Image (cartoon, rainbow, N blue to C red; front, side):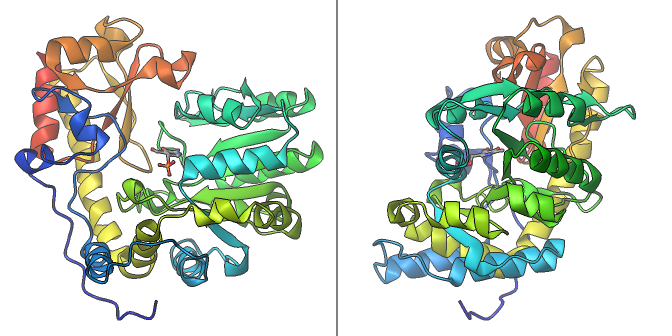
Amino acid sequence: MGQARVMTPAPIFDSLETLRTRTSAKWTVFEPDVLPLPVAEMDFQLAEPIAETLMAAIRRSDTGYQFPHTALPEAFAAFAGRRWNWTVDPGQVWTTTDVSVAIVETLRRVAPVGSEVVVNPPIYPPFFDLIPEAGHRVKEVPLAPDGAGAWMIDLDGLEAAFAGGARAFLLCNPHNPLGLPHSRETLAAVAELAQRYDVAVVSDEIHGPLTYPDATFTPFLDVSDAARRQGVCVTAASKGWNIAGLKCALMVTAHPNKATIVGGMPDEVNWRTSIFGYLASVAAFSQAEEWLDSALVQLRSNRSLLGNLLAEHLPGVRYAEPQASYLAWLDLRALGWGDDPSAHALESARVALNPGPTFGAEGNGFVRLNFACSPEILVEAVTRLAG
Ligand SMILES: Cc1ncc(COP(=O)(O)O)c(C=O)c1O
């Protein structure tokens, strides 16, 4: 929006006392003695350029409708170019309420009603609801071991699902809950298969900005012509800068056939974008990249702190550091806490975690822990869990 770039102070974690005054889900769903570590919200104070932008909007009573225009497409395209060397055409970027809505509205249009849509469990639980909401059926192709101790998309399983009639693939890149940015080779192979079987790929890249500097995020639409032909990217500033409540997401295409579909959505889909979300997202992409980098430094330190704490207090827990985002996928099977260890954690330790089984059957015996909190809270949570 032509504003001068301002120096961004490093992010600060709010104190527990201040956090408990927040009214967001993370801080109101559980009883006051519970440490809440589910819900993908961060405990940082808002980035200064975003806070300033929002306060300026409030001061001028700028609380009406968001008319679709070019500021956010241009800010996102510039960010994607700087950060990932990905060339985005701002003319192929549209906005809507949130990534969940973007997924539903896109899936509705890229596959005939009642189609099978592939997901890779363990997977972000709402995927199991968004697909039926779009009028389709979930087809599970679980992630597979990559032979080197990590996980990857099961390309043979994916091909079998495509050959069996699936019409779309809801890709999660980076993958939640594993924090796995898929490799360029894997994504190119996915695109190749999608083209061969004419399957649409909806790539949820909401966690992309939170990829750590020691890993590489590859936007799906950047990998090949096949990817651009088959794919739609859905993304947002909402995870990277913790502004999910402001309601704004982007839908990005890179081929006329998908641009026709997304650009042809009813105007109302775009008009549902919140003006606060729009303004904050422009500020995030264009003025708060330094803040994001400093947030990643803090999160990276928490990522290893968690490993050290688990090794010391709960050595039975298996944890592979995520390469993106602040969600840890913990294997608690050795603790004997049952299929849903989060129930035991809540009852006995008063620590709230996401129940593994909601991510699919592969999540039995697992929990997801959000480490975007102060080191003090993380220490307290693991100490409580160790009982
Ligand atoms: C992979 C993934 N997609 C979508 C969402 C939800 O995004 P939104 O709030 O924009 O609907 C989340 C939230 O954590 C997520 O992890």
